[in-house]
Amino acid sequence: MKIVFTVIFSLISLAFTFGQYGKIAEVSKEGDHNPVETTITINPQNPKNIVASCTMLTKFVPGYSDFTYASTDGGLTWTEVQNENAEKRIQGDDGVSYGINGRVYHSFLAYWDSNRGHDRQASSGIFISSSKDEGFNWDRRAVVVDHINTRAPMEDKPYVIADNSPASKYKSNVYLAWTHFAIYGSHNPADSSQIYFSRSIDSGKTFSSPVRISETGGDCVDSSNTVEGAITAVGPNGEVYVVWAGPKGIVMTESNDGGETFGHEKVIGWIYHGWDLEVPGIGRANGMPVTKVDNSNSPYRGTIYVNWVDNRYGDPDVFIKYSRDNGKSWSNVIRVNDDKIRNGKYQFFTWMSVDPVDGSINIIFYDRRETNGTFTGLTLARSINGGRTFVNYKINQIPFECNPKVFFGDYIGIDSYNGEVAADYMYFKNNTSTAINCAIFQFKPGTQDIDK
Image (cartoon, rainbow, N blue to C red; front, side, top):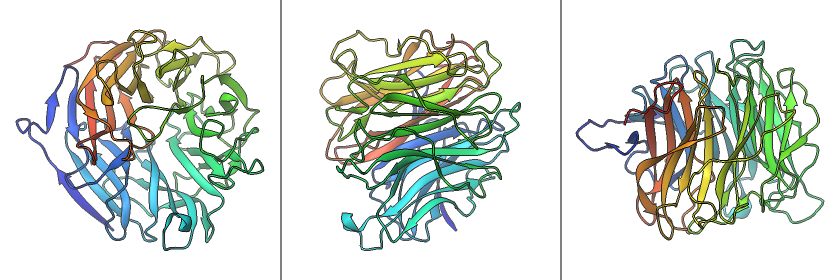
């Protein structure tokens, strides 16, 4: 069962604007209250079809809290789809990913917590639903893990990815990793956070029993000494990489058998001063790593890229490093934002996509280099030389002032295909309300030439 609202804009209605670079389109519809944590994926079989999702904080339609958005014109107009949530749990930490089989997957957590004033029995689970009609209708959700009538353990921050490599013998497998809290928020050293993993080998219909893949855990405080931000990425031959952040820094583990088993974890980098950042005007912010692999036929095919934010130069900046040999060795750290170092300006909430056709790296982040106080803009950074250098493009979203009393989520999203780049993000429409926009760019594949 679903409810569908179509939001249609004309070229002359100013519902999207031609900025300095790209187009800005509204995604969330009027009346949606405080959508945050938005995620996006482009259909490789039909790049004009884009699917997004978000966490809806204050709009509770009875029986519904599962929101997705679908576009069939490259992100210029969007249809909102409300999918039935029979148990009426609170949902969050959404992720979306298209598979090579034309099916799009939507991962999320769903919970009730009686300690937070909810009048239902406690529960905590991770679920995945899928759609085979470009995101307009969704199949019954598959259970990855579900704890009923208990508030512990707590499962958090799942992120789904499909194996889309034609050369992989595991193509069409679906993977996700997440943080498992023994007791969320506990300060007891005996309680730990760990990274867990599950896979589907039947196009998302069923999932394997979750397995722990971290060897070293963290605390349960939900801060820099907690292991969090696990993102799965898949290489050209089906290699599965999972990278996360924690007290040891940036940690990676690898599977070469389609996610059935994993090797030993290894530290591949350091997040200076930890992943839990302080950003004025934002209730909480993180610099957790985002991981992608180049599956194109570019000269950099197979390169693993890891993108994060830290304070090594005194204020939050966006960074990347890469490996050209399946994670055996890593490049030096490259600073992505190109404003002056140590200028006291904040960049935060980075997300990355690697174009599966031209191999370009496209990174979106919030940017305060040209604003004062908590006013915030956005930047797209793009590399066409394997991550060695980046060109920054100012997104002509009107800068907005942030309110730390309004939850702003933990992440934004971006995807790319054959030079088309679509990035979705939340912004403050006013002092108390957020909304979702999509920034759309068209580059000549493999170049920095952009259609303004």
